Image 1: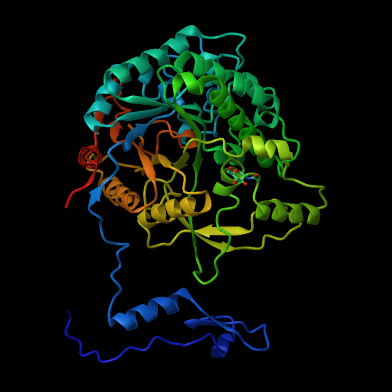
Image 2 (image 1 turned 135 degrees about the horizontal axis):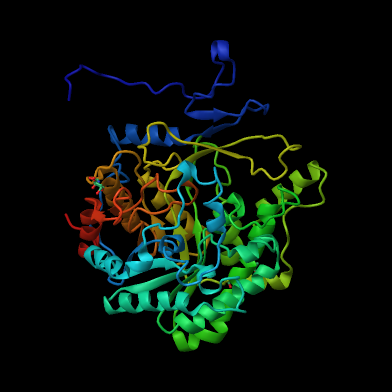
Length: 520
Ligand SMILES: *[C@@H]1O[C@H](CO)[C@@H](O)[C@H](O)[C@H]1NC(C)=O
Ligand SMILES: *[C@@H]1O[C@H](CO)[C@@H](O)[C@H](O)[C@H]1NC(C)=O
């Protein structure tokens, strides 16, 4: 292109060798050499394969990864967008709803960044009609929202049912169905009733029973009209970030494993309840939604076990049966080194059988990619550490959230990983989206790029039956409050009317839905 008279190129060096002042620590070769072995075995790295391709083709491999794919999704593709229970709580005082952990959390100074509280959120409680009109403008066929447990059961138990609270959801579901939009309902989106939190939250095994009773009530009252259920949204976050841990902390090292253990059991019991008592009459589907970043090995010639402590923590028991051997062994070793008997709870053989297979699809929330590498934290202090470090590539495009880089390639790799590891399940992407922060610009170019490029990668991927954009409108983003904005619609919080205005990405997303894919 530039007219430089280039006549040759040398990819050096052939193999790892003695690098002068740096000795053997550099490893800059196309082939790895194992200097710990007497016969110095050589193994090719991916970079060697890549170089071989360039040489063979005397130029660049097609790079189909990068190219847009034109084509259509299945005719029954479930296009959806979402919000969470907290965003539909405004007005809770009027209907006598009980407290959830977020009412307490968001009123505790310092817990929510920049001092926001979630009381009013987007006021969807009073704006069902407007919400439905926005969904119609997008052209989605599904709307994913969650029930606020404490709105329908103020103290968390079925001792008292708050009928006006339940009526709100019945009314919303009726309006959606009239508009030709199917409800996709999550039972638990990080909002344990405060009464149950006071009993120890998810650390207390009694929660399995309370959750199942709550699920039973929802299936019997809403099930005739709701055909898509999600038991738990992102149990990983509940287990690791402490939403719903209860007020006592016996041993910070083991809590996440105990909490996760109870979440998995609760999920399985709710699935069996639906399967045994409601499926024949109601004919719906029920599963769990797991979140995962794509874990790209930072060093491509050292493949690590990439997801055992993240996606695999929950996916192994539910899709394959029991915790993975790697997770069991690693945690056992680290516990012993720290002088503890054990830290990963165990399922009995009967429990393994009861939990295995409790899914109707694979619900996946995905946003971004991390580069991962092995790390030795030292066994003494961190017996529960997973031994994996994570960093971002500085060249990846930023968003309004420090943890979220725009990496479309990752969603395709993750979908293929799920396909290959968990028996090629039907996958519903239950969240995917990007945030902005700071000055408002309704021409949200990063989000337009994000939806176009991620959804195109989904088109290239595994057996995907549904796609849900997070989120319908800017809303209360948990510990981040209102500062990070994920919405397709802008919510003006300086305007007492909380006006909603479409961002340009509404066109991007609705065009993809209307075309059911990408037209050249
Ligand atoms: C889990 O269920 C699958 C499918 O029925 C089966 O192939 C697998 O062996 C089960 N796993 C265990 C640990 O029993
Ligand atoms: C938000 O509302 C305020 C008050 O009505 C108005 O001055 C401002 O222009 C609005 N901002 C945007 C981005 O629409």
